[in-house]
Image 1 (cartoon, protein in one colour):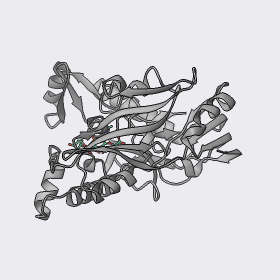
Image 2 (cartoon, rainbow, N blue to C red):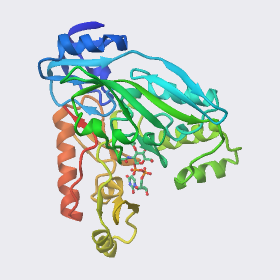
Image 3 (cartoon, helix red, strand yellow):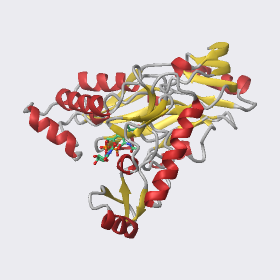
Length: 336
Ligand code: EPU
């Protein structure tokens, strides 16, 4: 493990916030986790930081940041139909995508180019273009910080839901994930329920392969989402709100083009991006922070934005969307 003091976190959060951590501990080997918990995490505040692509640091962190940096993809089992992989928490997510494309493993290609590390993927149940990581996660291994005990949770035990899991509930800030186990298919199949993806593939008249699907996803993302290396951002800033069907129907009287997807229990999932756009916020800027011109759900650091500038934009958007639609947007991003 490697401990540094007064670490600038600018390169450890995709929003590019210039904040410092009093102490910053990189875990270079999963075996070190129990001693990290014993030696460094008996006192708060601490924060477990993956790739920093879903975290907004709002001020200097007066405690210890723990960053799992151990990597590796192991093939654990295989049959003629599928394989089981055990992937270390510090492995960059997109490396796993490349690994799967190379070996013709189906299941997560729609999640191409999502920034962040494998260990963070189950926490918020990352999802895009009709696929969620929960569809392929077999189990998640790690340690509970408060007890120091190891855990191994099966897929149902992880209680996955839309951008949610046990790691954002009971185990929030109380676990270090070490490995995620995936079951991926050797049998050719694709999820093309997201209209934009099916259309893009059709237009390009390419044969349906892992490579072409992944490539299309990358192009769709490039067109809609800013590259964090160029423009600081944390992807979707808010969750898509889920409202009762009656409220949705009422809203469509005034806004007939409102997007609504069926959600469990007779609810409708609305598009936060569309609501924000209708509230006049697409591509709008307040000081050095604002929203992205091609996707209003993404808040961006136009350069040198302070955490307060980002929060000011977020709060004004929440206020404006509430006033217009009587819907309270909930942050997707972790505010620290
Ligand atoms: N829309 C607008 N204006 C906007 C943005 C979107 O009208 O500024 C409309 C679109 O026209 C479309 C609908 O809203 O009809 C949905 O938009 P999009 O397909 O871009 O997806 P999203 O619901 O805004 C979600 C995820 C993204 C994921 C995409 C694609 C959440 C919070 N976000 O966004 O995930 O890439 O679907 O599947 O669920 C992330 O979590 O960081 C993320 C980028």
